[in-house]
Image 1 (cartoon, rainbow, N blue to C red):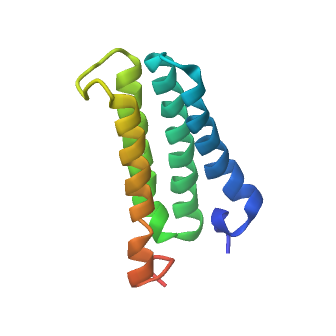
Image 2 (cartoon, rainbow, N blue to C red):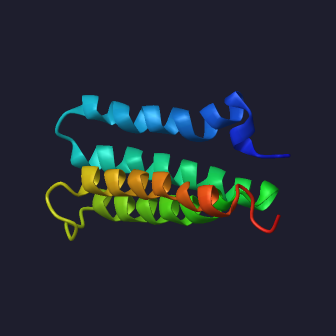
Length: 118
């Protein structure tokens, strides 16, 4: 099975490392544009990992989480350009909502199995 989540190295590279980088942006202080740019890159990175994993092994979670991460990256990208349509706490709200939705995407695997079409 070519599932990225089956090996620690690939799981670390695709998801743990970008999460650590994203959470480390809390150390940047009050620079919402920079924080949004970092989260945009991190969410896009995780989204790419999920999309590639969905193509490689048809992991059900990745079919759901990939687009969620990509949409979160787009929203953070909009915030980083100065769009304030998401409110004053947009950066943290978008990152938090994206991560919660990605975690919730494991529920269908519990109900229907880990891999689609098997």
